[in-house]
Image 1: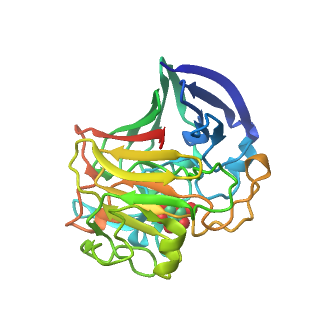
Image 2: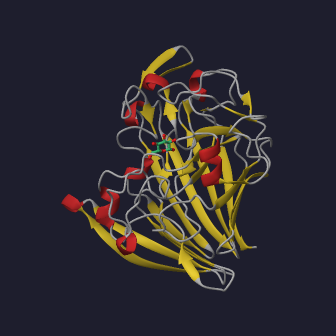
Length: 342
Ligand code: BGC
């Protein structure tokens, strides 16, 4: 059972419209989602003593989400992650996207799905957002109809992404929440134990584009198949953090992706998905300059993202899982964020 309430969150400048906030509540979770970028702005989870804390980074007010900020809580599209040099070919025709992370296109371009107002529809246990991405938006081919649905089921937040295209186009949708299971505003995630169900990962070049085939994690810092304590692990391997795609074992059916345990609070996040990959990002580019909720500042490594998705730059790498959606087909992916205590 979940309840859903609806309220105004803020006004966009220059008559751009009203951003609304939807609060989904079950006996175990409370999540706030706004119609700007389908963004999760708060997620309250109980610890083993039953004390609730907000475990996602973000802002108290709309202004925070309108400034330059690293995609806190937002849905990313039309194509999440990087496309090399913002260029690709579909059926022999070359397309050029907006370059917003030199020399590549990142997370949909200059004005991706995170920076638009979506149309909400309240459901009995959640909220559905929809929009039509026009032909040529940020350089992408064809019109794309998109539906993002958040539902709550006990301790589980379920996110479903659907899309239909008028022309063949790459599509790769995810949510970019930054979690800190100690409670947002905690200085780092070093005491989190992380497990990712992947035998291979994608090594990248200096612009974070995959350089080819998946490499075995065995014997490397990327072997997260057994839980590792993040801070110690980064130290042991002299790593600046993770910002990599892990290739998941599963097929298009629901499969286990990752588990993160915060022993001090007991909070556990388990992620399941139908996607072939997950970008594990440890907030390496956070630098403490943003003013977050409750006076929080967000330094490097103060949150982690588990962005379930197709593999980065798949549109240019023919041996990666297919990323093109053609007219008459349906894009349909689901990710489950399951919270518990242990
Ligand atoms: C990417 C990072 C990027 C961040 C944006 C992540 O999904 O992998 O490289 O900096 O998003 O803040």
